[in-house]
Image (cartoon, rainbow over all chains, first blue to last red; front, side, top):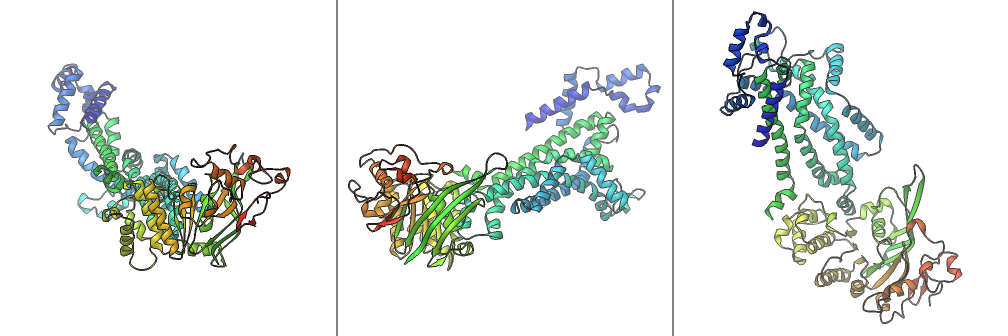
Length: 314
Length: 307
């Protein structure tokens, strides 16, 4: 984990360093014309930009280790604070999408497998294949057109209503703004889980132990409940946790389309406007986020699968 | 009266070969078997002769692409798919081949309990485990933690607790040491002595002979002979069919002579007697049509030359 973090930090640091972003220009913005070359050199010296790359990395790295990730240039606030606030917004979005896509996808996969070969199975498969090849941003636009523009059920974008004081924003407002981006994210996320669950359940239903269960007179729901569900749920849960990275990638696009003030949008902003500290902060943060997802997937296996749980004791 | 009767059973599988071309593989053809109460019938034959499929056909758990013809009766009444569904697990129980037939994510004690039809499931499961010398801790184990012998005894337990009148045991002995085999087989004997019927599917003639009353010899998906266990003795003079004779003589303690050739594949069955291509007694007549089962010396045989 530590090695991974250091490596990621170093690589992204180098990437940003070698990108055409000029931190001074990004910081000063349009006033650049008013800054004389002497002043510019002073800032360079003050920020230590004239030192070797390794030294700069060392300075930044030791600051991060002591808990200081620097100040965001576009928000003029500490990076930690920006990430914290943005992440809370994103978390609501990602969590609801994560749960929704997991549950709906799982149920759809089960229905498809139980009715394998029927019209409903074909419908679900067709739906999943279409979705699996649909880009998130396009789906977002489509959802926006249908629900926000044509039907007018939900607001077009943003995290809270425009022109309302922060104190007056209700939870209901927030939820209303959350629904469309969450819907977009989960619609796209469903396909993966559904197809995977379907395949797995078909395997399970063709397995020897289901055959034996049938030989013992078990059938229908009892059979599924006793022998199908657990055997299918395990891989589905793992898949869902391991999908954290995709979820984050999807969130970046969905938030952009819906101008939702989450971490994804902040990433795009930071990148476009050359906010190096924020960008690097987000990189570290997402690395941890995805790592935790994968870790949870591993742990869930340990906890839920007796073969790995009891196997360690033996 | 027979408790279970199988007459002219045929099972074939539909398969798609090139593109949409369908082909039917006849894996069991014109098979006859009778099972009497209080009796152990050993069904012996080489692997691939359709033994396991017979078990699955009786229980009605063949895959969807299988088609079945022929008549099966249970206690004198026809065994329809609906009746199979109602009876399996209750009146007819299966002892499957391997530990793979247990749910990998369920404790074995619980799996045995789900087979119990009446009464206290936990009590029944503990009693049967005690009888099979499976400790208390075994009921909390998962299938992957069982040794081969424990797994067999667990599978056997599922059938024992069900209170079924007919037990179909599919290869219950391979991989066990002689002592455990003897023990497992004695459980079947005990079970039969209680007035139930056991169909023991195996390729191990030797162990089968130790406890079986009757032997049904399988070849390429059909029975070639049904004989009393006593007939398998000495040089095999009392054995009727040339294949059974050859099988007997192939045993190490007898002549240890292998049979030349191999069993035909279901997709390429010979037109006449299925054993004719490998039979030393074959005459042109044998190649004409598949001989019918006929009674001979208190047994049944499917051979026109048998005496």
